[in-house]
Image (cartoon, rainbow, N blue to C red; front, side):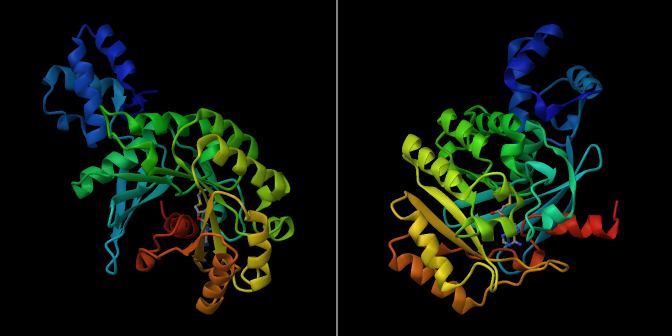
Amino acid sequence: MKTSFYDQTLPDWLVWADQEELPAYRARQIAAWASRGVSDVDELTDLPQSIRARLAEQFTFPSLELEEKYVSAIDETAKYVFRLSDGNRIESVLMHYRFGRSVCLSTQAGCRMGCTFCASADAGFGRNLTTGEMLAQVSLIARDCNARIGHVTLMGIGEPFENYDAVVAFLHRVNDPAGLNISMRHISISTCGLVPKMIEFTREGLPVTLSVSLHAPNDSIRQQLMPVAKRYRYDDLLAACRAHTQQTGRRITFEYALFDGINDRPEHARELAGRLRGMLCHVNLIPANEFSGGCYQRSQPSAVQQFQDVLVRSGINATVRRELGADIMAACGQLRRRKEACGIQ
Ligand code: SAH
């Protein structure tokens, strides 16, 4: 099977150039193209036809194909649906903030975590993405919007820590000054709480922001929402979070989606505040995204406000996430799910 162009690193290209009896600067030229987002071998315009022909023969271009793009009429958030070479589909989202452009990318085609409120879980699991497929999401979007991407969040479809090695390799590659050069401090990685992998990740010592999808103030509510909570206890999860903040000195983010009547009552906020007291953390409250066939309703705006007030009064830093791309189903997994459900190929 041919290797994907995007899965090759600079050292791989140097080896390749050597085998092909090409000078090392050709390897550097080729590697630079991966971060510019090429979709066809003929776009490598600074290479002679003979080298392009050899590349086309030995590598796949592109590793993913832009299938559809939706742009929000409200806030210009853009959702990209990519088709992988084996037919699997993933989604990535481009968001515009005051501080620059941010891409939210997928780490797996589908997800195995089974969170009961999540559209991705509902659409089944395909496979892990390769490092190159993650990188290609960022480069192809940078090229499409013709602008630099300054921030990346690993919060699209999939559980990043289930695809640990490829994700860590991606963090290094996207950070490479010769490539996309995105600062680790501008990268966030979101996990549903795979405790052993969180501990391993803390040891990597990378200055990325860790987000943990908490969504509950205790084990019993969390288990109702997230099967992973049956594998790892709430206390052990928080211990892994504390170890991360202590080791890295970095504030941790807790994602807390609010579902009407399930986890959004003032007593839940008080219980949560008690558990998080003293931690270097920030709680991101998310009015839950509803999708057809899903079994939860989003909280009332007054309940969201009250929840936030209780946390803030207890000294816990908490903000309500601004919604982007509401008109294009920009939230994680929603489009992929719709397509799979309708049997669209
Ligand atoms: N697997 C990782 C990252 C992907 S999901 C994780 O669990 O963190 C990205 C975020 O979207 C997670 O916080 C997830 O819990 C949240 N999410 C999924 N479905 C949602 C919904 N219907 N409403 C609000 N947030 C949701």
